[in-house]
Image 1 (cartoon, rainbow, N blue to C red):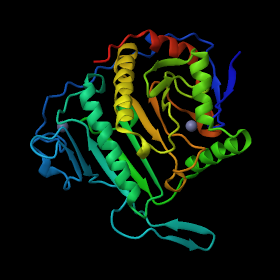
Image 2: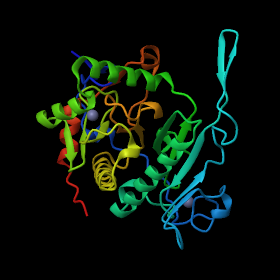
Image 3: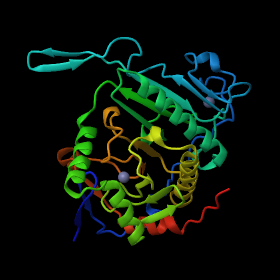
Length: 333
Ligand SMILES: [Zn+2]
Ligand SMILES: [Zn+2]
C-alpha cells in the first residue's frame, strides 16, 4: 500500500508509492551529455566573449581574469527600468513587470559540470550569489528575490555554459506567501521555528540525514515529491540568505560540493534544479521563516495527476534515498 505523507513545513501532501522497488540504478542517466569544448567562440558566457553580454554588474576577482561574472539577463523576464505599480481594471489586477534578472556565470570554462567544480570555485560562486542577492534586496521595487540553478534539459535550461540565475519580483506569489503564512501559524502555535524543529527531528532520527558539517544539514525530507530530493538547511536560525556569514557561506559551498558529487556518483550526472527558498523582503527579520536550498534531480515527469491535484507522486522512499546518498563517500578537499 502506498503512503500519503505531509510535509511539516509546507503542509503539502505527497504520495509515496514504492510498489515497484526501485534502486538508484533505475534512475541513472543513460543519454550521454554532448561533448563540450573548453571554450566556445559563440558562447556569450565564455572568457573572451564578454562583449556579447550586457555590461557586467559583478565579478571576482575585480581585476584580471575573472572566475565568476554576473550580467543582466539579455532576455530578462523583468524590466530594470520603470516603477512598481499595481493596477485595478474592474475585477482584474495587473502590475508592471519590473524587477531584476541576472545570470551568474559560474566559471570561465564552458565544459565544467557541477560535480567537477572545485570547493574554491563554489565558495566564490556562493559569495557572489549573496552579494547580488543583497544588492537586489536594496531595490525598493523588489518584494522577493530568488536564486536558482537549472542544469540539463529536463531542468529547463538551453544554455550549456555553467550558470545560475537570480530573479527579483515586485510582488510575492501565492506559492511563497502561503509557505510564510504556514510558518507563521506554526510559530504562533508552538513558539518555535518550524524549520528549526525539522532540523532537530532530522538530526535526532538520522535516518534521512545525507551529510552534515558545522553549518548545514543535508537531508531527504520526510515528505517530498521527487526521487532523491534533498534540502540543504543552515543549522543556525537565519530567516534570510543575506544574513548568512562568510564562514557559513563556505560551509554551504562545501555542502554543495558534496551533494553535486554524491548525486553524480549515484545517478550519473543527473539533470537537476536547485532553488533557494527564502522569505519575502518584508518578512526577513521575522522569527518564523528559515531559508534553505531545495535540490531536486529531475528524474521523474509530472503528469495529469500532479497537474490535477498539485500532489506529487514519489516512487522512492526518502529513507532509502538518504541511505544510498549517505553511502557515497565524498572526500572534502
Ligand atoms: Zn561558454
Ligand atoms: Zn529556524
